[in-house]
Length: 77
Image (cartoon, rainbow, N blue to C red; front, side):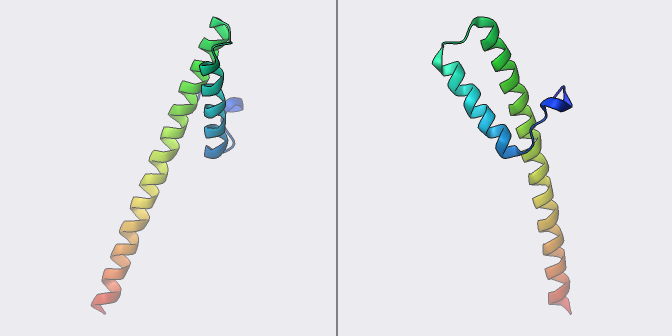
């Protein structure tokens, strides 16, 4: 995200805001300029969430590999 002040506090907070943005856009009540701003914010949040998920996936993969290699060593002893 471009501004650290706009960085979500958590993945869950970002998802809640994305849901809120989707609702506002689906409503169709926002002016064009506001809709564009909401869409931009949503796109940035979606990218941030995607990066968080990718990082979590990498951590799980790394931990799984470490756990697998540890269990292999235990079995060989």
